[in-house]
Amino acid sequence: IAADRATGSPIVRVGFKDGDSPRTKLHGRIVRSEDGMYDFGDGEPWKWISVGDKPVEALEGLRSFTILGWANPSSLKTGSGGNRIVFNLNYNRSGFDLVCLQDARLRLAVNEWPDRVSNDSSPKKLRIGRWTFFAVTYDGIRAKDNVRWYFGDADTPAQLDRTTSYSRGATGKGSGTLTIGNYNESIQQHGKDRQFRGRLGGIKIFGSRIGPRGALSLGDIHKHQ
Image (spheres, one colour):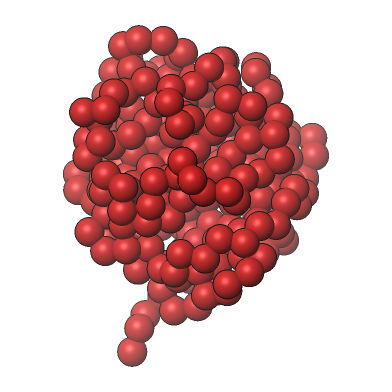
């Protein structure tokens, strides 16, 4: 019998005042503020945060999941293909890739490279110098209308931005290291300039291996904003 964690219990928490779970390792001169948010800066040398000392097995085999958090870009200049917010692909397979593109829209890839994926949020959702709350939900059980993008800010509860169709099934086994703000080591030979330029924090990842409940409802998303 497959077991599942409680819907309200995140698999991953990064960028919180009371610490990160699993434990994180900072690569490069990343500044952590008192509220737990991380400032990557917007130039070389490039930086990243590794979550856990090995791939997070609990993120594999997810039939549905939600990634949410706060982003405050200092620049929208991007490396080729966009800058990474959350990444745990094993090179180009088995995992997910949440990307910020140059026009400030977000894109989600599951078990594949994102360049040919077309499930994007609306453009101009992130703004330089401003904190924006984002959430993307993925239901790999459904074939259509299974990706939803939500955005808000400190004064505005998150609202639905766009619903798209992108069905890639469950997240694959054999994922790479979960990395915040850049590629992981499986693909860094192609460069490290896909770093998110600016600050990230309050990141949570929820998921389910047995059904759609890992794709949180808007009401549940509001509880974590």
